[in-house]
Image (cartoon, rainbow, N blue to C red; front, side, top):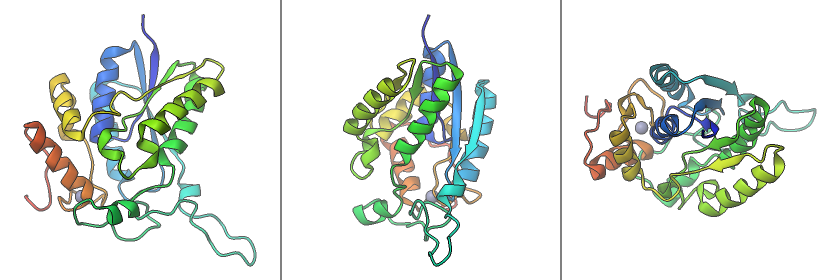
Length: 234
Ligand SMILES: [Zn+2]
């Protein structure tokens, strides 16, 4: 008898492979989705709803955009976006060049994984589950501090010490590349064709933003057919 796990679930490729894998590994899984005010949250949620329905997994959505989209100014104080990032609706245009240090930095949502894990740990404890899982991977390490193994290690300790049931943080992809995740997903039958990556959040994947480029490259490197409909190729 194994544990019950809550999966931080966006509807994206990485967390869908994680969800599919955890469904096989654990007796019970629940998918937990946060809207943090990004431009592509709507498209991610469409994907997340379809996929969890297909996999028959209980799925819960919570909104945290009231803090992410900018607070109410008090008298004589300017409005300040609680979180500043071009990934968010309150931010600038999504860059469409290949990932580089400058454009990646623009789409960092400060401490996003820390925020989601913190809220998720409270949720996990509340529903009496023993594990929480997140799909950060090796490709994220360069730019996102809250995806790196050091962060995960300390967060694991924090969540364990901060919860009555000593909840375990599960991050099985932290040393895998995105191509390895695509390969794994294809092997375990994850519905990759239903997942959403594009930061722009338009009708189809734009094919040009950094995460679309990364998605294409991952399928290509993994030698797995890319089922995504890109604006640039349709
Ligand atoms: Zn895109």
